[in-house]
Image 1: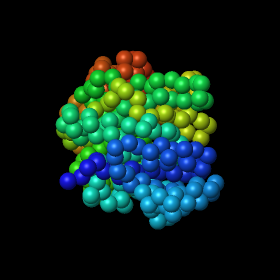
Image 2: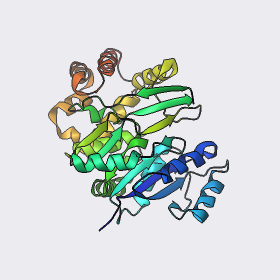
Image 3: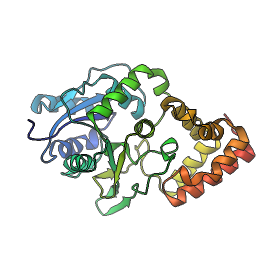
Length: 305
């Protein structure tokens, strides 16, 4: 019988040398758990690979996957990890970015909640930080909605922890529908949708599990400020967001529901209907308002894609 829960931690890296050591130390310093960190590096050229190789020599818990062709994004790199890592022998699979700092009890708390509440997946609030003195709690633990998983993730993917059984099912899904999966630009959104659409329960913890570093090279980062607002506007205006929702609904089978089919494939009428059902599609109140207005705008102006 295992004395400690055992975690496979999947880390995607690309030119992350500036903060990689701090992040790895925070992962390897997790209390009351056993860990193996599987790293997929996306052809870094800033010294990231040298740091990883040094860890593999001194810390056998860190393993680097063989180099393959450039993936060109965090999502594709995480899909590669799910495709290629062997999860047998592990109790849980967790995701990690290269530049954050985990709180010491991040994984053991996830294990305790997964067991106590008999759930299959976990994520949490985070504390975003720009400098040691500039921090902000990012709340993602609002009550889940019937269809929120088709339109948003369960918070930052770097907080995700899955039971090995659910992770193995997602792995089979990734391997079976590889080309389509790689068309989804946000792996945390797709993973949340896969778990929820298959009837599994997901816990979003109110207690933050990590410090979520914000800097100029964040591929996604916190949706705050004018620039983040304009990015969301562009994603809606050019049809990217609704196209991604359609792809995800198709991949996870949610588009078999008549309501979802009307919303996503019903043209202007479908978008108007979706606007009136915004309360079922986003967790946070202000996001529901923004979502409804976006659907109205698309219905009136038409999609560009």
